[in-house]
Image (tube, rainbow, N blue to C red; front, side, top):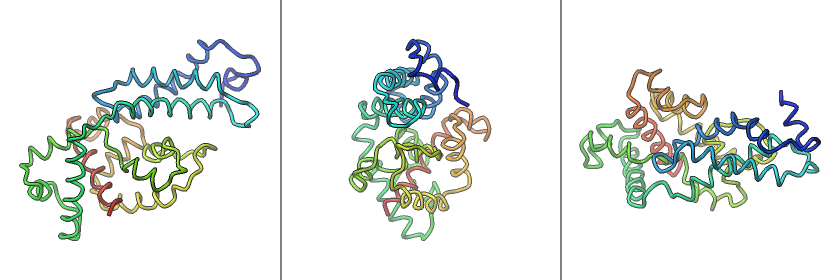
Length: 245
């Protein structure tokens, strides 16, 4: 249940400091969810700062006549501000992007040849890498997402980028700002998930749907945080290859 401070924000116009304190749990929640995309270039603290800026913008721009709750509008602005901060930094270097594209093409070819999703050893051999080099590559691609955002924006020009990231993060709640044509993409994601291993699906579920950090997942599954990161990135590369097939 929303607190009185939020419900009556534009009736009583509380000091901005009080509002920031009220929204800090929400800001921290989304900073934790998006922090992985920006590491190591951007920290959670940077995202919290961006979220506060988004809240301040919401405070000054909110229009009660739109018949949308302030909390809904503010959370939309908070997430958008954090994502803007991540995008500005261009987290993934060009050289790594080139390696990712090469990996996806090779994985598609190997998938077609085998008629199934290949094992780690098969992927490493096909890429002419040792298993250790392959795992190091997987660790180097933090910031990669399920889908190529730019390509998807070209396909759905009316789609807000925040809606895409919400889908990736597993945010299923109804929102007047997020009613877009994502049904096709959702169906493809669900189908693609069937091709992942149980371990990969578990890591993705714990991270995107349960909101756990890599460290927390590693503790639950009794792996190192580094290994969880590898599993996560490998699963995403597989999904990208399947979605682009």
